[in-house]
Length: 305
Image (tube, rainbow, N blue to C red):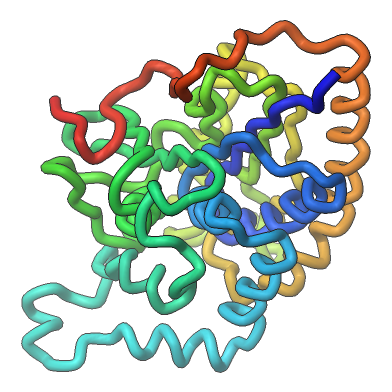
């Protein structure tokens, strides 16, 4: 009996998504390479790295290089400031005006391959069609732009245009995209890093941004629950990271340290699942000759309304 084809789903949730790294490391230590990956927002970033051939250890090193040193990270952000006063008037540098493609280039660089066609593991990146009001599944074309669109969180990043559509953060419509995996995977492992708000610094009353991000996390939880009802993952991992805020990327070391327990949990649960499948395989569709993605709205750059 051959080993099962595992589909990996990496959800959105801002800095909490750094814990995707220990989960990917768990799969590496089990000797498992995902057969396909689907990712939203921060999950799209790490999904693109893993699909491009980077190991969990590589992604950990990249994360620490990007956010492990506060001064260095802030210096990188400073390079993205408008160079001329006229740039502030025309494009702005305030609420929702940061270019996600530039952020991705500064912090991820060449770690993300240029195109989907360059990947070694099939990847589906999920974004939201702003004017279409629906999910957008991207599986071909410009990978870096697709990932930038998937992470374009309103109030932080500006939207991204792809193939005539205006796209924003995928977590708005599909925070843990289990349905975006191809139908032929045998087992689904999903990582949900959305959280429930917790009082910060002993304060019961949240600030404006904290309330806004907290409300979005509550909505993401409800959307994810509905998605799980339609396609339940075989393993659902929910790291206990409610205390980590959406933009706490400079706390990367602490998130990775907290993720060690999650890694061990993932190894145990996925290992047991693989063993059980080898004895009595889960009923799934047979793999067709050509990879098929689950039916969904507009896929890839060639899609049209």
